[in-house]
Amino acid sequence: MQIDGKQIAEELYAALAPRFSLLGRKVRLGIVVVGHNPVIESFVRIKTRSAERLGIEMVRISLPEEATQEEVIAAVRKSVVETDAVIAQLPVPKHIDTNAVLAAIPPEKDVDALNPIVADEERPVHAPVALAVVEILQRGGIEIAGKRVVVVGEGRLVGKPAAWLLRSLGAEVSIFSLEQGSIEDLKDADIVVSGAGNPGFIKPEHLKEDVALVDAGTSELNKKITGDIDPACADKASLYTPVPGGVGPVAVAMIFRNLLDLLEKASK
Image 1 (cartoon, one colour):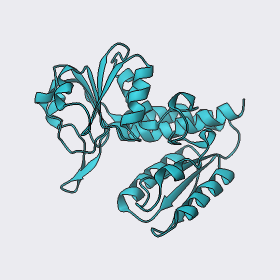
Image 2 (cartoon, rainbow, N blue to C red; image 1 turned 90 degrees about the horizontal axis):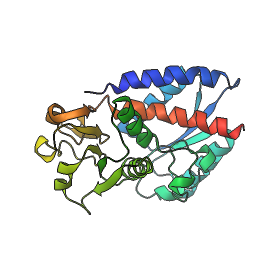
Image 3 (tube, helix red, strand yellow; image 1 turned 180 degrees about the vertical axis):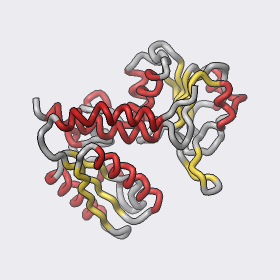
Image 4 (cartoon, rainbow, N blue to C red; image 1 turned 120 degrees about the horizontal axis):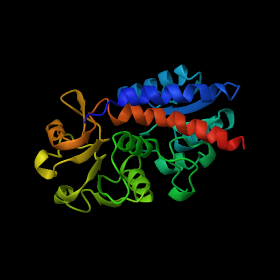
């Protein structure tokens, strides 16, 4: 089964729109962008379009590439005060401490669930990509509890939060990365979730029949966005997410589900 992430996202937006309307006010989502990068701008445009369709005002603060860490943190704190929730668009330039920037967003306004000083079990919402992985598996009829899951990569956006959330739902999770594990571990996996950013390196011979494949890895190869999992693996899989058009649209929709959840929690 090949997953249509755009269709799932459409269904999520259709469910979210009336709930945002019930709030009875204009919602403002802040985003802080440092430098100018065409790939980053593409991500920002997607988020901005999604916000507009839900009647949400996207409040952007743009800073130059050479902005200091103090200036970036000050911009984040300004956005925290002036908006309902905040995105610090990643990556930031190398001279900026990413953790320090993310730590400036309090958990109750952290739609990306990336504040590094908050324990996973204490977050009011979960990382959008991790939520997208679970949503896709559940919609595909894939049982999570008791299944052997291999998460490829352990980054802050995909691997780490996906591994934690899947464990919390009862899966037996191991992590394969350059530092730990072996690609041979994939042969026993019922579910593979990949976010390594290594184009096409997972091949059919690495997998067993009827594995569920969720590809959240994105990188550029020959001027095309591609995932970690070779498309030839689809023939071997019970569930397969293409790149692009799989996890990505669902993860963006989950940002807005998180926003709504945070607003509803704050109003109680």
